[in-house]
Amino acid sequence: MASHTASRGLPDGTYIVLVRSLYLTPLAHIMMSLAFLGVAGFVLARSPDRLLLLLAGLGMVARLAQTAIVLLDRKRALRDDLDAAGARRVERRFAWAVTAFALIFGAFGARAIQVSATELDLLVIVLQFGYGSGLVAGQALRPWIAIPALLLSGIPPLIVVCLAPGLSHLAVAALLALFMGAAVQSIARIYRASVDDTNMRRLFATLARQDDLTGLPNRLALREAFERLASETGAGMLAVHCLDLDRFKPVNDMYGHPAGDDLLLAVSERLNGLIRQGDIAARLGGDEFVIIQAGARHRDEVELLARRISRVVAEPFSIQGHQILIGASVGYALFPAHGRDLDDLVGRADEALVAIKRDGGGIAMHGQHPPKPARRLSA
Image (cartoon, rainbow, N blue to C red; front, side):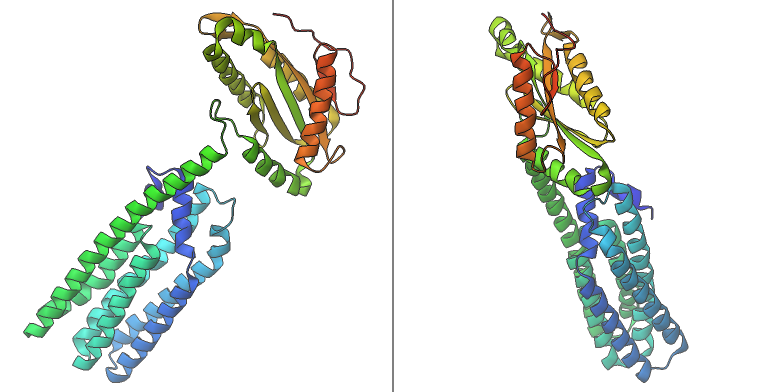
């Protein structure tokens, strides 16, 4: 019953959303526990069977374990930073608890129908229907959990009812079988529809935060990343680097806009390969890029990244069979020294960028007298 197979073929983000659905209705688990306790107590009062008593006790232990898992893991499952590995862990614990109870509940239902008075059969069967409905409503997005639980809890009572004499028992058995078949179909249908819907919503959310040409984050994603990084008090210094490309316009004029687009894509790939995990490179439009550098411990690290950006962009590009040489000027500002708002920091980094470009290009920090460019890039 390894749950890692359940995520196969699903994007991690979609898989995490589906696992979270298991933890959205803790009250339903509590209600089912109370319902099972009430029905088990009523049946045992009328039919004090030892095996039935054992199954009722085991069932309550399983219900309490499942409820405890839901309540204890709920906060972890609903955290924004939940990853696929964490989702698999909380899903696996949930699955074992559900499967254990379903197995015990099926045996309890079968035994209760077998030894109890006829009027008590109705209580057990109604509880079976309620449990199955709860599986469809609450766990349909994880069919590998819901369908086995439905069958484990429903087939033993179905067999006992089938073996009981009388047409009424056969009719009840037929209804139980129809219900289980319909429930399985409902689980499969809900799962497929939910996966398609979740994938589509995630796609739209990604496109809304992505630059159409380069695939880099856009302004919205940049702002979200900055707010997240700025809220992490132990993250160290944040630096906002603004850069634009030197001599980009002649590329468009000489080779055409498709070549210019290919060049922008190649630049974005180099920037993505340059930054560390936790940093973010975004395109604001045209040949304007912004990099947020996280976790810098001193200004020398920020200066070093700015120089690496300039050096990497200055290396030759092969675009549509042409060797193209460009450069990048970089202006940067520091959080919180130069501002706490992203717009302010971008504006101040851009001021440094404009100043250094006026002097021929290079690297500059906001508030610093622009030094002589360390490297003058030529075509």
